[in-house]
Image (cartoon, rainbow over all chains, first blue to last red; front, side, top):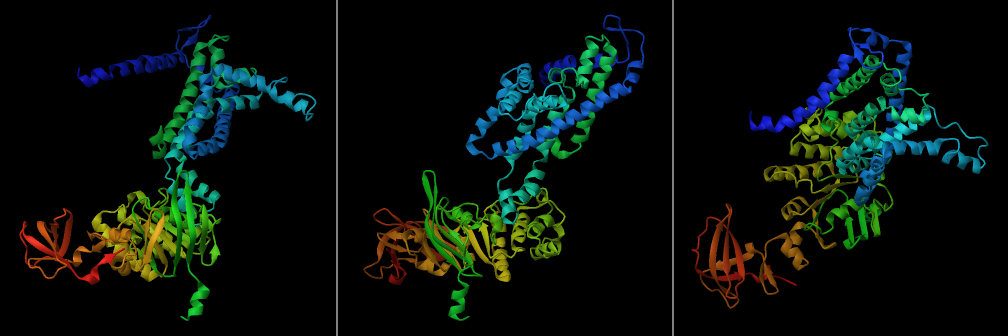
Length: 276
Length: 324
């Protein structure tokens, strides 16, 4: 073997045993029969794949796509001004970036629990509103789609801000100046120059938020109170309480396929390729 | 035009005692300037002299710490760039990479809701000989072509003043000389007042009707290129606009300095010729005075060539002396 082949060997081993083999196992499981106490058995079957077309599961797929899409949209609405602000804050930008990343120093679980303390009936928002006399009984903030959405946006916002910041930061400052010079108001300058030129960052940020949101299970589990079932929860259920591994594998494949199709579509854009 | 009419029209741009402070240093230190309509002005000086900051205050990108900017009889200190009737050609050209050449040129017209923006942009592109590139993106153009697009994009708006921030600096020397002639022709045909920023004295002298020489945040002289070159107001201007031989407090340009084998009068200075440099159309004779300083004489090439090491006499016409 050449030196080049040797030096690539660790990477090849890692990608083979941590990526190709596990995915292969999941793919094979899709076409097997469930064992009585978990696991899989012969014979081969297409039943698991056919069950995916059940309206119950299609509704979960639709709900997952909808929640992941809404979370991405909200992350864009919240993340764009933040990224723009950081990119233009001169020598303070590193401080702001550190603050954006600060939540990552704590556990995902702890951060999600924190939202329960904020949203529950005796939580921060409801007690504050009641003390102010604005409401008399607590608002139902927790254990619904809204709570799940808040958790998703909060947890994945940095994934939107960072690539967008990278794009905005590289933008030549003379371009918005030239637009203003040619008579464009600040709003028109943003609309015609800054926004179109930040598209690579928008695309990268959207993918980085949408894909993990599509497969999220911890956030809907904790903040949705078991009512808001997403694909991730369905998979978890099949592998644990339902003990139906083949169907869990089939649902996993749906998540994988949806993400792969999205990426393939986006990667046809040259601009997104540059960033991803 | 009668004098009163000129007065009534006033100046297209007037800077009144402009000061710009940044934390820790003063970039512009009391600049006053009046530009007449339709002329080519240069603001020339070494880097860091405050010329770009001055230009950015005219464009509206910086606010003066004190002093006033007047455009066509209106004080515009607090007017944002998009409301000022001036346009800037940026050093980096700042063409919009996601728009075609034509869309770039039409950008300002569309923002100002000028009817037939595309038609006017087309005509402007034709004027800079770039009609064939209308559909291209800026990334597909050469440096010289980008420069011309930037010019067309600003000129098509027919601004009161066109501000040019070292627009030739990024071009290679041959192209730069060619663009210089094009730039002057464009100024003449458009009749728009140009305010051109450069650190290149040759550009400033060759292009301008009036040149303002800046140093350390101040304008040292505003004059025609001929006057500034031959009658510099300060030692700095003299040295910045051209090479100088210094004899104590007296300065003489190399092309007005003579070297001869025979002593002509008492004012002649003895020197030793050290090197002869051939520059094509001229020769540079470098001689050393007994006190150690060097003197350069520039003479047309093709004359009698003196040998290096020869003793020579340095002379000049008293009329060519400059002293401060």
